[in-house]
Length: 267
Image 1 (cartoon, one colour):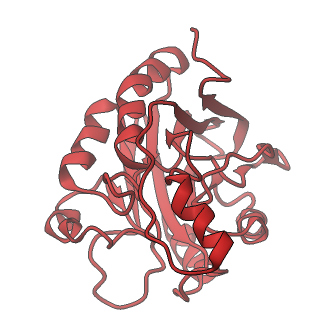
Image 2 (tube, helix red, strand yellow):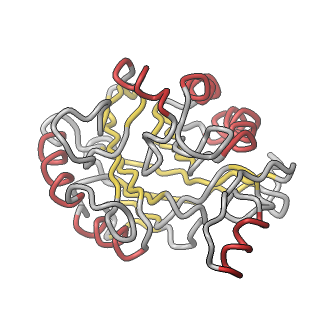
């Protein structure tokens, strides 16, 4: 099985990049499943709307994952319980959390499970992602060994730690949230594909997708600033493609995907 994963879609420019390049990537890379992180995809860069969710699916996403901005656009409460293709972090606390923390889809004769988790270092103190992962993976592996984890976290060490903790039990752990693609893609011990962060998909001229002025101002004066999504033309699309053995669930290859002005897509 080949999985294409696209990192955090930011604002209108991110959605435009998905609409432009995702069909081309799917045509050329021929993934059997495509996963897109959409937690920053509204025009203000926080949360997701039903319209944008449908646009991501129409452009080729099979599953949309989320993160710490899941609830920032309140419209999500209107549709998150009605879809099996949108997953939010499984370790959100509480008994009656809207939506689902994992989902599954048939891929030819195999079944792919997609889990969304969120880290706790420099982020809100959610339920323990390691304990939640243990419980979910144990249950899911009764049905399929092919498991993809989008781990939405701030620090590399936590992402690396959970990848090693789940090594051999899941097919891939790919980080999201920091919006900068890391150069550490590997298959750990010929079992679990890992990448600290897939990077972002959106405007490349700003600072992590935001307009520079307010971000720089905050560094200069240490006062709160209102961040707004960069809207200029240059765009970036980041992610990775992973090959997995359907029978063992072990990854055999992971390769980064990067499209921007310095890395034009010329296939």
